[in-house]
Length: 376
Image (cartoon, rainbow, N blue to C red; front, top):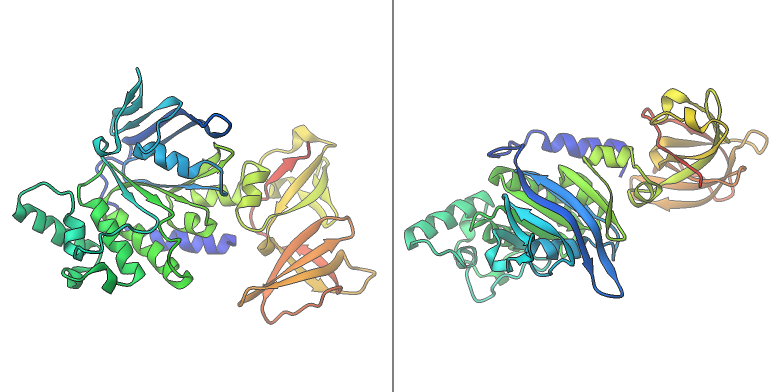
């Protein structure tokens, strides 16, 4: 996702009003949690906290430990070490205490929604509620209104679309008013168009409900577009945690930079003026953080496709040549091999067509600070 797209997603949600009791109160606290399966260390000394009404997404590749973390929070797995507290009460850790899933005030929205096919929409939402009949009916009506399914009260799940089934699953999980709501790859079973629509809808519902939520996904755009904060996981640990704009534009490691969007790295040498690269010298004020301590050292500067622009030219003035192009509908992403040996990506409007082998000049057009990493 480009910087501009991420900012647009952020602005779309700035207008959603959250019904939060105390945005400074920590609802979930994970302290030094480790899950060891013997030959495999799935989660390694993980610590994080989530505030009241916050939506945190655990993002990472397959096998990074994000799903195991979700299962530890739900009580479906017991940690080898560490403690987990929900709403100020320790649910695991601390003198060996461990609360079973049904003893934790946690709701779960499963990947496949897991609706009861023999129950109506209203009966699915009411399942597990123990109040008197009138109170249950009122709660169900309130939630169906919240998820915009009032007219589907008596329908069976099989008569609903995928998006409607997801909203039923969300309403059912919200019905007992959990302290924390867990969402396991909540949009993976939806088609692409509906996925975009539903993640916006789900965020709005969660904010209106004022619920604290933790989502798990491997989809970068999904995580960046719905989350208050994103925790990037790798090999059972959190590499970086922060708001979507920060983790995307200022990744703290090469792994985070490479995992979020298309990342290219320009090799350069630190000078008194900045970093000298094959595309020119990037002045110090264009770089994220001070490079002064690395004077004379080689560093890699992160550039994304929308940071660079290629222009056809002759061999004598070219910085490199096009070696591949990827058509994305409204845009082309061109892979350019520079004379220095670095390979970068340049994003262009779909009407700007370059051919493989065409010599090009590459210019930096980014209007933001660039992240950089020492070469080890």
